[in-house]
Length: 325
Image (cartoon, rainbow, N blue to C red; front, side, top):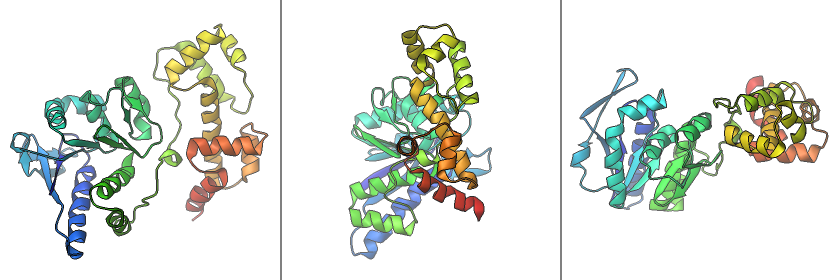
């Protein structure tokens, strides 16, 4: 029997507590229906018997207090809600417990922005991690020693798992079901919950917002210039000259401030504009390509797919239909 502990932190997202409990309880039912024994002992664990969430609108009643957990094989750290700094401060008391259980052999799995609480333990310093794309810049500022993997749905390293944003955590849940049971059971769970088991990237859902919450004013000026003139073709030397910096110094400062090279930033700005145009459905792919300053269809397609995980045609088909419905 695998012991699963689902943490119930303060300022956590109710669904990220209920969903793993629902899934692993359902898998137990699938196993019993197939004449096999239950595999998972699922418990809600917290510092108190009752944890109020969503400004008191919901209450979660825990099965066990932290000190009552004698052994656990897997700990789920659910998504947090609100200001991340405030949420972490409220849950500092959970950090030693998580670290102790990990050192005793438990696996850890963070769901969405539960990655912030996971990172606060220090256990993923120097390791890979995923989180919601919207929080990636903030995550990097708060935890510079963690290797945040952009766009990844699931990361796994050293008995620690993390997932991408929002409903992406269902793919991590299915990944763990398959690990602990088998592929057939994971597929059955995917069909039951109507989850795309093959999805490996959240890139198609990401919105590039740049990274301007830094203190390098010269770099911020260049970022704004790129965004205001996205149809133009820039050289790195021209951009460096705008703020009177040498090329090497400019490139180093740009990367440090934005976590992108200059070329990556330019490409991401152009592709973000292209995405919005394709979503409207009013222009074909070639028109959009020319609008954002690309003249080579193959180059545009390759960059678009690298950033979004989809070709321009696939992206237009995925989102323009929804808007036209």
